[in-house]
Image 1: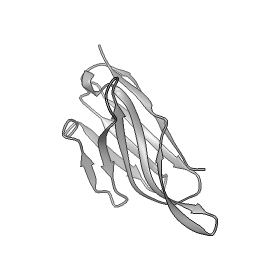
Image 2: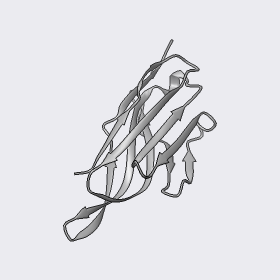
Image 3: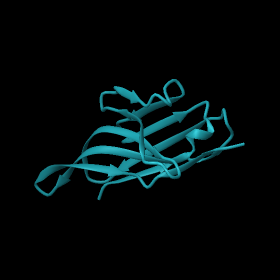
Length: 123
């Protein structure tokens, strides 16, 4: 079984910072891209940022210059540093990973999602 466990959400004032973490566990042969998505109340889930196994990154325009994604491949962990937070950043943040997992005598592709962590930006 493959799992992603997120941590680091909470309540922060506008202009503040938070750091989210997401650790992968299970019978994983390889992790390709990892990323963060978010879903605000009443809205669809949207891409925040992604990072490849080689470290190439991609950001939504709304978070460029404020959020930074990074990963530690040895720890199978991805991080999201969020600075200059705004009320519109309030959402449940989900970790995502594109993995290759062991399946008996072969391997298969598996996309995995975390359970989500709530970030609330409010004064």
